[in-house]
Length: 223
Image (cartoon, rainbow, N blue to C red; front, top):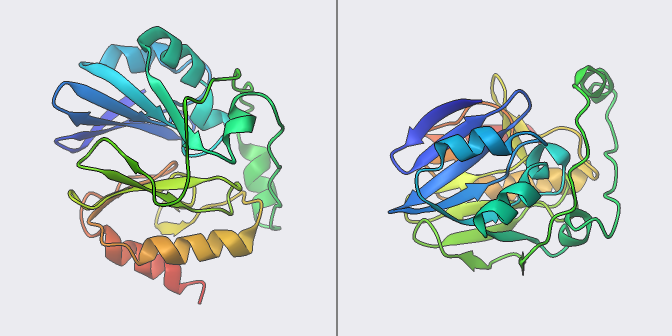
């Protein structure tokens, strides 16, 4: 796992597949996503405060794989959208993606990841809810990748966690492997309207500054 400082209060934890993020408020930490199964130990090594909450942007195993282990170890509150919660708890199956032709070889090239162990969700959220970190983190529903995918917008520091709604691999673009491409595009358009300077993604490099322009450019490709 690589640790990258994006902002003084924000670190990227980069894994072989995907990334998680740590936000610091004093000695209180919020973890956004948890990596695949096996990521808990390296994450523990960089926790230099109290892990208060774990926010899961969606149910996929590269985001939720270590949630149950970390939550149990630290007593952290687990937060997810109400539509994702049954899948994260292991009560329902998540819908598979509807692959575009160009996505078929991309999916085939990915390493196989173990399924995420079921994890309790302590707080179910919906669009517009506010979480108590970063001066108030606004939940933005971004359906399309999964039904209950969320992004997090921090208006004060003008930061955005996109989850897999957007990627930044080579350039900022619509995320791949969506269950509903039309809804995913609509979610991208919505994120491009937000006032942000910094954006971080489930996959790809952070944009520490100038993220609004990058999001608008990605959105414009789908007009």
